[in-house]
Length: 97
Ligand code: SF4
Image (cartoon, rainbow, N blue to C red; front, side, top):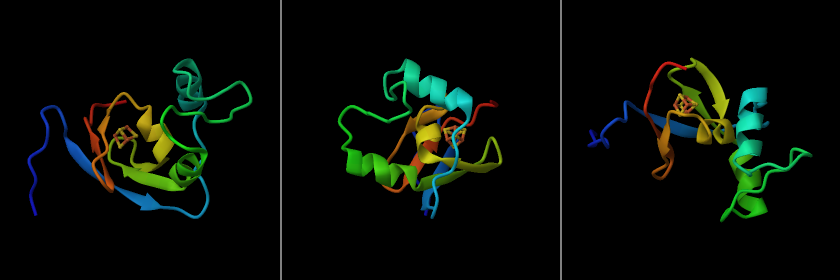
């Protein structure tokens, strides 16, 4: 099935479930903190997202086509390549990181 991708989007990356949260890089943590989505203690607070949802998001991952490894969804969410999240997938701009 083919779909029309928004301009600038290179990859459609399926979101998968993992059993244990994938560790975030320090860079992703800094990114989350500077955008106010994580407090000093490392607790996530994302506007409009309930703690229950955050918990679920921690167990979501993508097989990142750019970094060629599994990336936790929250790290993907703050990645410069992140475009949007239609149901069950991530639109990724696919630029080199
Ligand atoms: S948005 Fe970033 S982390 Fe997510 S799939 Fe694309 S390059 Fe990988």
